[in-house]
Image 1: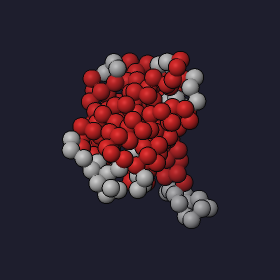
Image 2: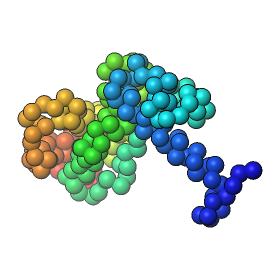
Image 3: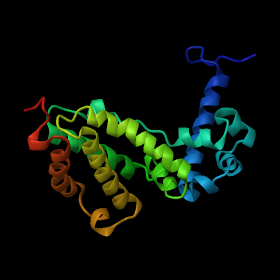
Image 4: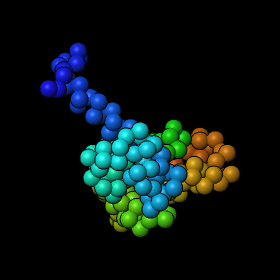
Length: 202
């Protein structure tokens, strides 16, 4: 019989299962970051997580299912968007660059690395950015070609993040974040809010 622990009667087995699941996801991100999607194996991920291969399959089904969950991230566009278009762009950039800086093996970083060698990973990246970034940002662009503008701004931000943190391009990697923001925010703002603001701001 499942034993309830002392915290609100939550079954001990469920809490242990959540910890195991989280440990597998962390090991998977690490492994995918090291060798990419194609070369990573469930057996190696299980060994790194300290569990049996059957446990990985039990929680995630397949390597594809594990990869999808390991690299999923949510971009809180609603929370980052303000009435000030410059502040909004700065929020987007700080959020993205901050995530890379805080965790080199963040879901976004792992997915981008894996997409370079796996068409399956590249497809996940395309769908994820389109759904999480391009669509929501385009909905807030008060100008013609809204989706193209959103896609271009996303490409610029991803390019900055990947060259600063993934490729380590010296002029970006060594630059102060405030200097990067000072120069690039007006450029991206003009893409998504031409003329200094969206239709709602003007």
